[in-house]
Length: 125
Image (cartoon, rainbow, N blue to C red; front, side, top):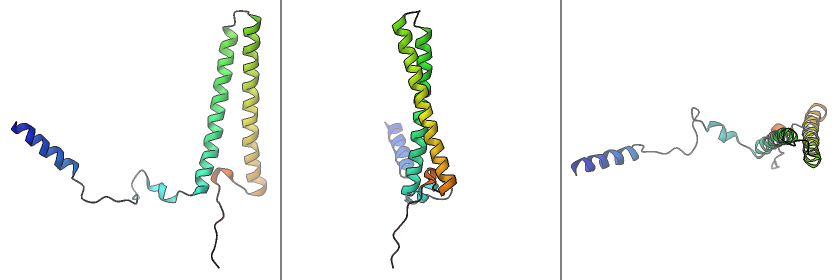
């Protein structure tokens, strides 16, 4: 019984060891960059994320089409289904590549960087 009381006191002291809680991340913390987070950087991050996820999805569709082709066992309908899936995956990858190329072209020609988008702000007079 006494051991449980001592254990409870240790747990409570450990839980309440910190007296202050800092709401702003410090320079050494893992969340230090969250203070610089802007809507433009979030949009740029989402654009990068969508491009990466789409490329990964279409790559796996391509691999699955190849596996279906191997597993078709000479059946004409299974072979056509696998060939169509591979074609669709290649078209999807081409679309993702063209979207990425357009983003790079906009950055080079017009200096519009969608990967680190900066939105205009209203300036008071």
